[in-house]
Structures are given as C-alpha cells and as structure tokens.
Amino acid sequence: MPHWLMKSEPEELSIHDLQRLGHARWDGVRNYQARNFVRSMAVGDLFFFYHSSCPEPGIAGVGRIIASAYPDPTALDPQSHYYDAKASADKNPWSALDVEFVEAFPRVIALGQLRDLPGLSELPLVKKGSRLSVMPVSASEWATIQAV
DNA sequence: GCCAACGTTGGC
DNA sequence: GCCAACGTTGGC
Image (cartoon, rainbow, N blue to C red):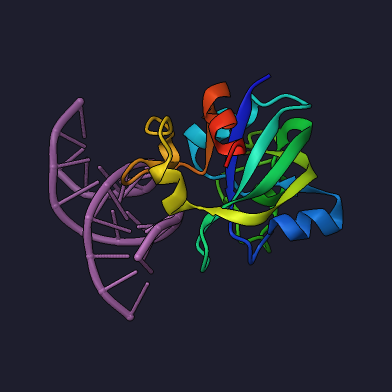
C-alpha cells in the first residue's frame, strides 16, 4: 500500500483540527504534480500530516484516505481562497479527497530532524528548493520516520 | 519581513 | 518555443 506526505498550514487545518473533526476534505491543491499524486491515492492509503508555514514545521501525525479523488469544489466557489476562474463544473482540473484522523504524534518531527535522518535524501520534502505539497513516501522512508 | 527557488503567464 | 516578469511557497 502506497504511503504519502501532505502539507497543510496548521492555521487552516492542523492534525488537531483533524482529530477533533474526525475527517475532513483535503482540497486546495493547485499544482499539477501534486494533483497527480492526489489522483493516484486510494482508499486506505496512509499519509504523514505535515505542518508548513508555521513556527514548528514538521510531521505532526498520520491520516488515512477515506475517499479517493473527486473534482475540487473550492475551484468553483468564487468565495474560496482556492477559486480558479478557469475551472468549470464540466472542466475542473483540480482534485480533492477525503481523509480521516489516525494519529497525532506526541511531538512534531521537525524538518531539521528529518534532514538529519539517513535514508531520506530522496524525499522531496528535504530537498533544497522543493515546494511540492503532496509526495509519495517509500516503504523504507515511512519506516525510518515512524521509528523516530 | 526577507528571500531563494520554483511554477506560471504571456509577449514575441 | 523561448524567456523575462511575476506570483507563490515556505523556511528562517
């Protein structure tokens, strides 16, 4: 079963928000490479929940996919921060999916810590200049991070 | 707030 | 198709 990592700004949706809600729609992905990964996710896949653009960037917990990709409604909503004027109901290039809470780590695994772990050098997250917000995590990378 | 790195846009 | 300008991401 594939594993993933997805970034979220905790001010928008944190692992603790997801814990409180139980489940949530993961939307607003506006990058084609990230979207393609979203589209290849399947129900049951696990992902690391990464907190970005915050005081303590890092992996904050784990979530699970509970509904595979469907057209992202925020692209069609003029009120949404993620509104895309070029999208229509017929032609919506963006995808969302539904996720559920699995686990919140007792402490965030900081980005600096991740950089120091051997075996993660191929993970886009730790590569200089990478801004990819959704990425695959290999079985060995997953195990390495889970062992922290 | 700064700024490096990247993706997207649009003129040509 | 090239590439400069611009906007965004995201750590620091």
